Image 1: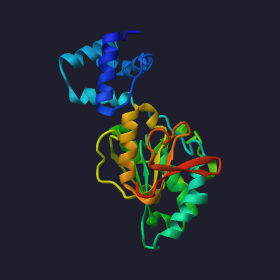
Image 2: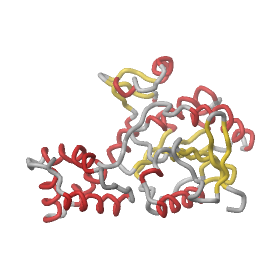
Image 3: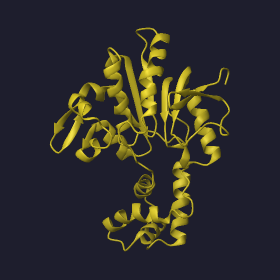
Image 4: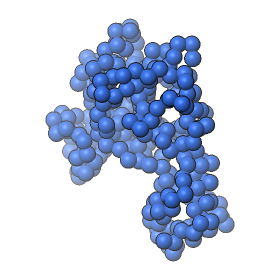
Length: 274
């Protein structure tokens, strides 16, 4: 391994400063694996040499690439299942009943990675809700500019569509585009993708009826988690729904949320007056 303790500490501080993500000791292997290709592309001997070159000659473009390389972009279609079952069985019927027919429903896929979560939602609602392509808006955000561009493109490799996407939905909602699969234009129009750092003040967003903030909070320290949950609550409607990852909770972090059991999973709603 070419990563020195000094270089790891510099990377760790950079990533925390720019994204609030905490790289604990023991993650040296992750930094090495993610940054070595970047070092090799620049003709450098290893990651420590890459770090030294950036420290000696600061380059905002390179530091951004370093931070983006160390954000986790693990994703798949219908990941974990339960939050999507709950969306169509419980959440959307309640929201549709509570809203005017001409009122647009707004959903946020935070930390959207390459777009599978946002398009999973789009496919489900287009199948379950009449006129969904005109009734529902899905905002997809991510820290990574590359992931945002991939979400906007709506194109996925064969390997990617093989990860959790039912064959019937692939046939119904995608067309071949060379070696890739492209989501239907009507579904792509439902999704608006943009960059967003969850640990910073949020851009003008919402108000949202549903927020998917899954498998994100686990990467932050407690004060950052509290700040994110507070900011998210401010841009949700009072009867909105928040979905977190299976290993995440608001309990012990932010007491202004009410946990609601939905089937085999759960979701959270802002407490009244919070």
